[in-house]
Structure formats: structure tokens, C-alpha cells
Image 1 (cartoon, rainbow, N blue to C red):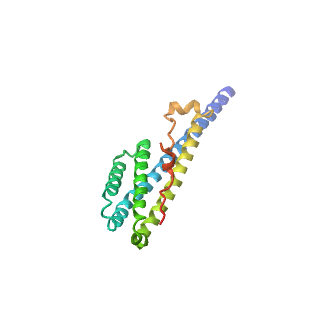
Image 2 (cartoon, rainbow, N blue to C red; image 1 turned 90 degrees about the vertical axis):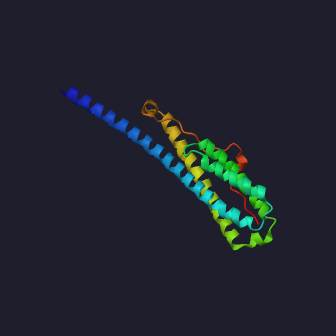
Image 3 (tube, helix red, strand yellow; image 1 turned 60 degrees about the horizontal axis):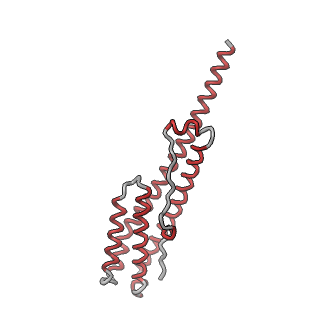
Length: 186
């Protein structure tokens, strides 16, 4: 009779241990999904700000049509990326960041534009979004790191694969120079 109670106790402890590991992995996976959502929010804010920025510059620089078309195309490409396509989103945003850099280079040629309160406000909003986006990317990568370590460490590795926990990708850009914030100087 005592052996049955010992066996029940061992099974109970083992069950609690497995549930604890499983819940820990679920919590880490949810943090990744949440941090990915934060990145998407900041990208959407930037996406929504761009038409205002382009229209403000457009009023001063009508002959810079190719720059505006490039931004519009890059913005449209970002809008077409599937919400869970990490690599596609990173690549599309690289193109958009480059196009925005060229827009600010155009703005350098127009002193009245640089002094415009509306343009300065948009510039500051973009700078803030870029800072928030950089922070969100770092947090996302930290959560992915913690999760990837957790699913590969013993004893979680024994159950992670069979429970559907697989390695996640880091948010990385092909061109490291383009991960920097858009430089806005006037």
C-alpha cells in the first residue's frame, strides 16, 4: 500500500513538473507573439505617417517626383507583406527606410520646408516612432533568445518538440546599415 502512495506521489510530482515546464514555454512563446505585435504597431504608425510627410515635402518640391514614387511603392510593398512574414517585413521595411532617407535628402534643398512647423512636427514624430521601433525590435529579439534557449535546455528539450515548440527567427535585416534609425537632420 505504501508503494502505491509513493508511486502516486512520484507521478504527481512528475505531472506538476511537466505542467510547469509547459506553462513556462507557453509564457515565453506568448511574449514573443506580443513583442512581434508591438513591432507591427510601430511599423503601422510609421506607415500611416509617411503620406503626411510626403505631402508636406511635395508642396515644396514638385519636381522630385521619382522620390515620391519610390516612397509610395516601398510603402505599398510593406502593406502587402503577410503579418507573420518576419523576413519579408524586414526586407520591405529596409526599402522603405532607404526611400525615406532619400526624401530627407530632398528636404535638405528647401530651407522653407526645413523651417515649416508641420514638417518639424512630422520629423519629430517619425524620429520617435523609429526609436520606439528600434526598442521593440530589441525586445522581440530578447524574447526570441530567451525562448530559443528555454526550448533547447534540459529538461525542457525533452518535451518542447513533442508539444509543438519550435525555434523562432530573430528580427534581422540583410543590410546592417539599414537597421539604423532614419537620420533626419536639417
